[in-house]
Length: 127
Image (cartoon, rainbow, N blue to C red):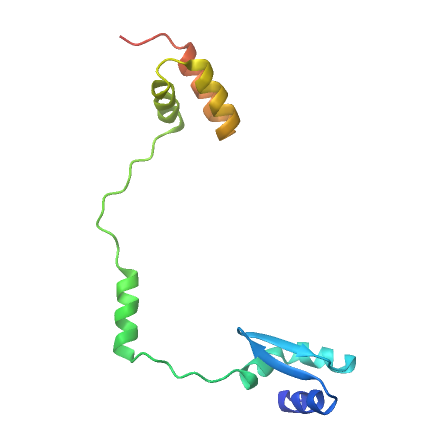
């Protein structure tokens, strides 16, 4: 059975088949045609989809691809290690270590980072 024959059978049985937002939609089709629709889905999509001409010339398309492929020349942001994040967090709370640890456990829910913060709390102050 071809895609064209499937469409003819669906229409003759009172059902409908169409493409909406790139997806195949069917309504009121006979159950016997469901396997054929599934088997020939790609062909039905191609048959029922409106053919839209490409609005871009080859040169325009290549320019768009080149623009998208450009690499940023901005410097990468430095990524802090978990230990550096823990030190920054403890410093940010200006010595309120209990609040630091509590907030970290509740908000971040990161036990590894929480352990590093606790380690920072217990570490002797550096002079």
